Length: 219
Image (cartoon, rainbow, N blue to C red):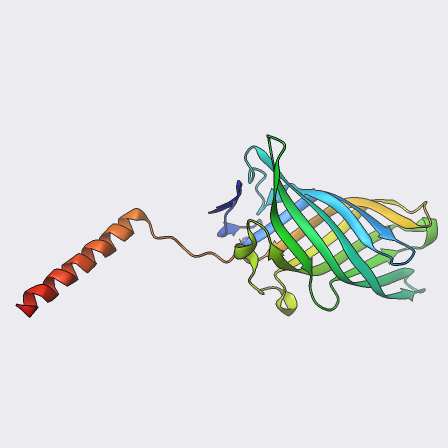
């Protein structure tokens, strides 16, 4: 188990399909705005509701996040499939741990991975958008838990992989598409195991015994 700033997760957890889980967080509340005019930025916020399938990961606290700065690099429309694929560069995600005394701390500061940091697929057009999905890559910058996730273990050497799926879509405003839905953040935790006190004691006794034996032989 690892605990940072009141947030706890089990790096040896097992998923429903029997596969090991290191760190996968789920958000059932992701709200985003997808700009339809320059710079076509993607912004939003959300709350993490599960880590490795557990809802009890943050006792007397919540884990929320804000994101923005993802700017459009390219847009391609497939008229046959009625889809538009948008790729973005840049971007940032700040994850905060919020305490009962109304204070909060930056738990993770993330930035978009070099190159394409976000790929979004929009199904439909105009006011008839019926689907919005996104995937992307992030790198750790700072925060309380930064040292645990600066691993370069995801695709293209990123620290985090994320995805979002919209369940509610409002495309009535020509300037932006507004959505709500769910998302995931996946990473590989970097943990240095701390020996149990008993193990430390045994090692200490072993070193003392070795030193005594050396002194005896030296006489």
